[in-house]
Image (cartoon, rainbow, N blue to C red):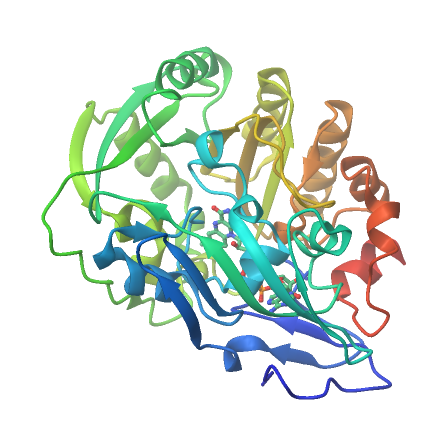
Length: 403
Ligand SMILES: Cc1cc2nc3c(=O)[nH]c(=O)nc-3n(C[C@H](O)[C@H](O)[C@H](O)COP(=O)(O)OP(=O)(O)OC[C@H]3O[C@@H](n4cnc5c(N)ncnc54)[C@H](O)[C@@H]3O)c2cc1C
């Protein structure tokens, strides 16, 4: 367990580990210990009028939301799960459904405390080169001990949301064009099994945090998946039924809590077990335009071996502050694919090849198998970043892609 003042282990490479919500090996260390940052879980200060919060790096975004929501504030960027630490949010420069409005998480970070293996403890600010290396720095520039973040002012803890079916990627793009200015949060679910003329059909979600009951909604308790389901999510019948239901849903509006809107999967704790013992891969890429998305979906529908749900989001133009930040203008497509061994790996390699062809990148937080070449092509500031790595830090991801 890491404490802010503890000396770091010497003679062996370490890696900070937050909640382990990264899907691949970027939070694993094959060569030494991990520093469990949940020991760093104190709030340090909160300016209620200005919405500026400083907390230790092991505090989760869910804990921040719980503290600040009743006072009219929300973390400025929220990922699909609340179980992400501030350190993890910084180290992957995470993004949310509001990227087109707010950009990536690092844009809202005002300062970071960083401990290096030489014993130094420094405060970094936007504009410092080491700040730009540490945001999206994959835990390799040192241990982030605390984070100061500018929160977002919200009128309540409730979201007015709308869901609209679409029949093609053209329709999805048109919906996004029509929604970006008036909705802070947008995302689309795509039927990953649809082929031919149905390719790219799905449901578009848009929402705004709106006026609502003054009492903030309670943080829900997850219900656990009690066992490793026998590949429940892989049954073709279930997949087709699931998609058919979505395809026939009418347009609907509703009011929901920020918890359910931002973190829908959290209500089902251990949902990943529904994929059975062999688990699954998640592939998240960003490509500059819809042609790339179409090619990735066409491949998925024929070779994705039952990737039934894909998520599509258009990133906005606001620049990301990290040298290795993943968000950039374009469309980001996320595909969950059950692990069926060699054929799955071959399909994922083919997805990477398309991403390279269309000039995109793969999100390291979700990766367990991309090649060094794919990584290098997607992150042009890699060599500059490498000069800031702390020699006492190492991850399995880094050893794999960089050798
Ligand atoms: C259901 C689900 C939905 C998700 N949705 C999104 C999404 O919408 N957008 C998005 O961007 N991501 C999303 N993610 C990914 C997740 O936000 C990132 O992987 C995040 O970094 C995980 O944080 P963590 O605290 O679990 O960190 P870990 O996964 O434990 O570690 C992630 C990285 O952060 C580093 N790190 C952790 N703490 C520190 C520290 N104190 N100092 C330095 N480095 C540190 C680690 O070394 C590692 O490189 C999702 C993940 C899940 C499981």
